[in-house]
Length: 135
Image (cartoon, one colour):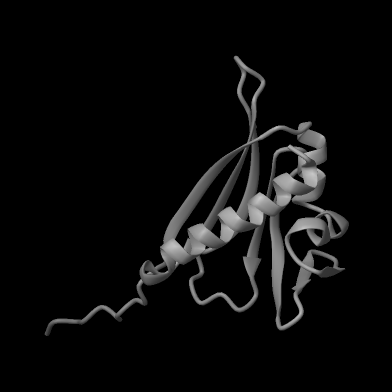
């Protein structure tokens, strides 16, 4: 008797983008990790309750749990409506040891047919962030 494995849902693809940012790392981390920071570039408003962040725009809202944080370096969220148990989005700050250049690395996960749209959305959002920084 052959036992069939249960079919697994296909998992989302990892999408990673790197942006060079002229900013002090502490200022950048504040903008990608605090409600007041997010409301300057990412969304209109943010409510927090413990580790639950609710990001609000005029026509929608999205909730995400903060699932990891290393102050000054990285913050990671999992959307509460996420189907893929391995999917998350994170903001990581990397400082080049030789040049001291600051990079923001955005990691997200998207279904294969949504990868380009996800890349475009993050590029647009980070352009807003860079404008806020005046960089």
